[in-house]
Image (cartoon, rainbow, N blue to C red):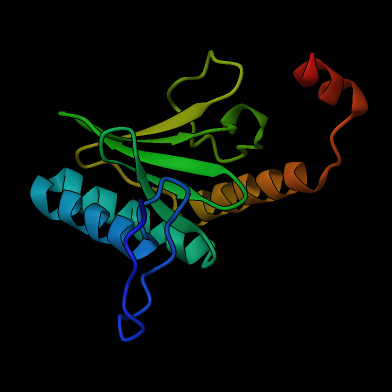
Length: 157
């Protein structure tokens, strides 16, 4: 049963796709960066800054046990932290041009591609922004494409 709020109650922020308000997702990502407290936190913060600069309309989300996710028309990429690296996984990376050769992980898959950054590693910011913009463009292109009748029949059957 939904709780009714009095008319004087301030409007609640709109929830993101996972039901977490966008400002709460951003706060959770802030907390994750601060909790790491080492080079991984600084790198995740840098990656986040580059992503947000590349596409101001990108949405921040938190999924899969606290993983930062950036979306626009679908998932663009995730920001995962491990003991010895920070990983940016692009959901449709295999379909993206990568002239700068940023992808260095998950290269044998048919869909995803990733960029692993180790301590002391450098990021090619202009190339990463181009990659992010290409991922957004691909997501939006796929959203605007009408579904084929054959695909609809497969789902219905």
